[in-house]
Image (tube, rainbow, N blue to C red; front, side, top):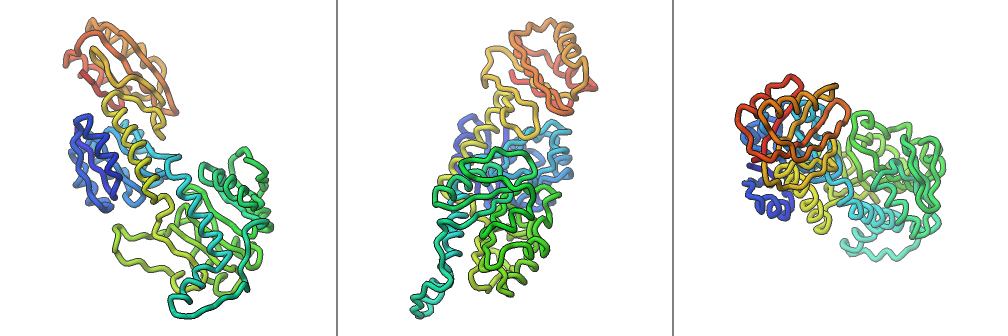
Length: 398
């Protein structure tokens, strides 16, 4: 098998894959669609982060691609429908960099509340500005969290431990942790929060979620942070509210258009505004988080490639199996229609196959059955199962 890892994925991923005799190629930067199509023609496993888009066209050009690892939280850069349609399993790291993002949010809230960026700039310019004007403690202040998923909920706990009052808004029902209070609407949160931090996902429906209307509803002299997705925020509207003084400061780690590689030029309408922190999408970029992500996602890709386990895949039915078998193993991803298992077993019986163990799981339009056999597989059996009209992808491990 061959794997391609893009965007400076941690060396731990390389180690885990090569341990199982998977040939690995690594590249530092992201690839555009044409570059990716050329690169994945003979690749079985693909590892990316947030800047590489795996489109339907890319997937159609790589019919041998069995697994994609998103070495990050989000998977909106991958066409999941197209991946599912050709039986390509997708894995991500929903928890590995959560703490790193939360710590950066807390650091930026404190920096903005104390105007540390302004103080730092003046000190470097030789100006001693020892003044408490405009500087505040975060204790007792109200934090509004928009999006109460893995990051938002952990931010809630950490912020409360600092003495902050926490409100949150999420379109889904979420259990409030600690003393956090759920708001029934975004407007309710904006009316009360003194600091607003966004932690929503990158689905298309969230594009433009926060614009001029929402900024106008925020409390005067409040703080704004976005460490989720760049498409969520209207930066021109944010600039207007910062320059007018309606907002006291902002911190942004994500942008709708980001440079592909380190060292590439970056341009934003928010550059040069006092008390605005701009960071190059480093919310989850700590050594601890990147090592954990590399270990977790590469481990999932390895388990799937070697044995067929799909536990925690974002688009496949969930099947947990041992990664070794004394005989042969058939991995059959199929359309979730009645009678498939009976059809598969009928073919196996016709060829005299002895089933030792079988695990089936379904998810939406897909079914996935893993069958361990006590004897080796004749090529004719594999061809017969592959040709079934219900078959999406079939792999045989001998």
